[in-house]
Length: 317
Image (cartoon, rainbow, N blue to C red):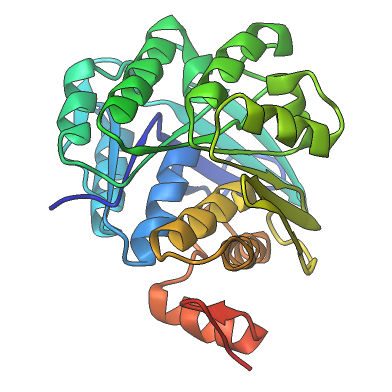
């Protein structure tokens, strides 16, 4: 089946627990990673999605493949490797507070072959989704993402780049040239104030968005918790967000991206795309887990109708 979206990057196993860890602590296994979160978000909204990546031939790797396949994500371009699957340990300290430890050094997810990528791109997806996380994992991972972006551009596929800077993986000075180059090659660039500053050197969001647009992007999506904007050749669109009590804020940015790309695939206008993106972000902030609370297409329709927001391009109220 031809996918609507191909996403490329590392998906890790995760262990989540509350309070202090010790004998008898209840630990919940799951999966983590921006690309996996976005893939699940889009699949639940009935978009055809393929994830390209590598996992270890171990319990976590098998669990990741099984979970994603169960969510309707195409995992035919996933390879099992001898290296271990990356692991994220998440400790819930309290509302809105988590302590996260990464165990991804030497992980299988750092290695994604050109053959894997070429096979997925050859299926002709409408969108390639990549993030700034994968190139932070090492030279080989960065080269894989650049290869994917170049292949997508050559095939006329829309490239969506979520800057997604992770300071625990690399420094701003090291990241800047890599992220700037990827942003200049993308059609859709998504990031917050700090991330767009890394890409452009501009700390004012509006100036940063203009700089990214001038570098060649078709549209720039700026997102913060209370407001989002889209800048394109047609002008600027702003969409405020309704803040909710946070249960677990991790994954909100990925949910936002899922909602935005879903709107692109559905042919919605800029305001409608941002509105859907905000809605998915609020859902994840208000629920446990990085992706578990993401809605199905039917649930989304009900929620959008309740909010009085556009559904398939029309206003419901």
